[in-house]
Image (cartoon, rainbow, N blue to C red; front, top):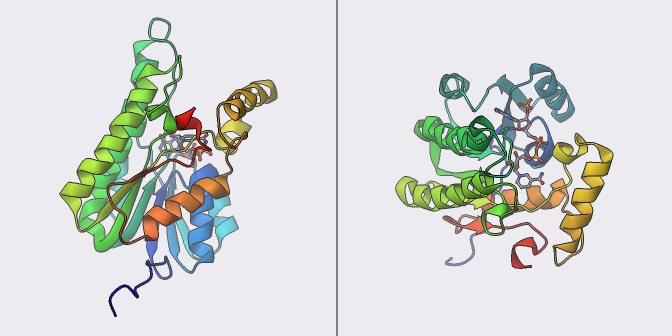
Length: 245
Ligand SMILES: NC(=O)c1ccc[n+]([C@@H]2O[C@H](COP(=O)([O-])OP(=O)(O)OC[C@H]3O[C@@H](n4cnc5c(N)ncnc54)[C@H](OP(=O)(O)O)[C@@H]3O)[C@@H](O)[C@H]2O)c1
């Protein structure tokens, strides 16, 4: 009957998460497995991947990949025969003021976060199910830039644009973008305590809900984009209203 279909779920779906050994990617993988799906995790560090797989159980496997290296991305996808959904939060980059940072550091967001996701999608496409989806990772600095990260902000904006363009080009495969604000993940936990607290306080002042987000809140947004079969070409901002203030 028209209108009676529910959005798809991830049961029996093969979900690839590049950057799945920690943070938002790991939480997405955990939810997929809890909902009866299978995950293939990617990341640079073998030990961290093994720990994540051990925590997730037999529905999880992993392969080492560095998204700054095109041949590494190709080798990651090579043995996979089918991909239902792809999520690509894995990247490594720096940021700083235009006149203060090295060219190398300034270019790192595009090298890793932009081209890494671009080539991940390119390698996944031949294996992606027509009913499947891609969720790209951007960040709310796309619309509300920091004073010390022009290239990083532009990279996030470029990723939002890439998502819309790929939604057109790859249809019926759905392509969406998640653009979080500050999410209190392992990424922030690795920073010195005082830096983390200072950033969290500043970010909290700059949101409508008065706090950083959780990995559970970010992962829920990703799962929505992955499973809602009428959503494509969208950008979702789990950012507590950061982009509005
Ligand atoms: N957390 C936030 O506040 C926030 C806000 C907005 C946007 N984001 C975006 O979300 C991404 C993930 O955030 P998170 O908090 O989940 O970070 P996280 O906990 O540090 O996780 C990053 C994951 O990506 C992998 N990774 C890093 N560099 C990689 C590379 N070159 N190739 C392949 N995998 C790589 C890491 O494993 P290895 O280190 O072992 O490779 C890890 O699995 C961030 O990079 C950022 O782009 C985060």
